[in-house]
Length: 435
Image (cartoon, rainbow, N blue to C red; front, side, top):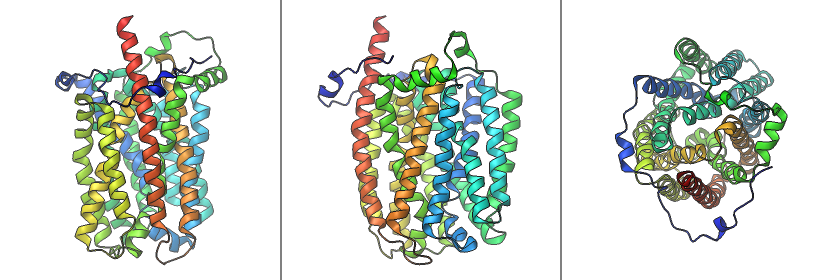
């Protein structure tokens, strides 16, 4: 049975504290192997994130190429999310019963196969099937990666580690998306997926050869079956608050990204050949600098403080960006960079906070369920976004301002939920120090 809800968490005056995080944690030196693990996980995330993110900027090319509507494109994006939701729940029961290296290799191999199917898809139905396969395997990888980080690194430095790994988001924009868009113009929209397959094969081989077994959690004996382990994790009330926060964390990306390139080209007047790849490049360079900085700050000044600041910046820029008409390109670049800085600076502290919630015996299951909840919320968000913008082809994206208002509201609610998670982690740390 799960732990009882501590109602005092809801009555505590709002005071942003730092979880007793010491600035000295920034001076901790990692071993060569720990540095290798961080770099490896960053490349792993790069391939998975790029696979997800590349579909959105390809929307401008895919919709006319396959003769599909904006709603159908939204379904293709949501298909990945819904299949990831299903696989995450299936994997949750087994996540803590195997060496994390073995389970990572299994799902990464499936991810590579699904991405290859995307690279040879010749119809909307085939692409939809390929995205489902990719989501079934790729959707679990981030949760396994987070479990590995939680197993190998202490909470005091997890912000730094998460920040370094999340450079993958920026890297996908600096390298992956601009190259993918350029090659799409020159060769076709299949190329970016085949490029991801090539990168992933190299990463997979390195994981197989050099990553050491990660099996300390197996020393904690459990007689529970996979189903019992899943149900016990789901019924643990101390975890439910984190799952609720994750539900809304996914809203922004899945609502705005599928129609971002279409909005930029048709509503803002961006040139899809010359300016669009350049926009992704500049935004990626900015976030590549911000992600590790946000991670370090979350360890030194406080994870929730950094999350709070990034959220306020995100809301302010969303309300501006989603209400623009034809705009000078330099202004779009500035607004877009600040917007992404706000959004991306929330990721490392949020993940570091979430990693401190589960007990060691539940880490794999918790991370898998958390990932599933995120993808399910994202899938619903993508479908809702498709309904809001409508099915118009080759014309301006309608009601993008409404998407901005919805996402901003979700961010406000998420701030409250993450504060409760923050207080929960503080109590847990204080209790551990008294034992």
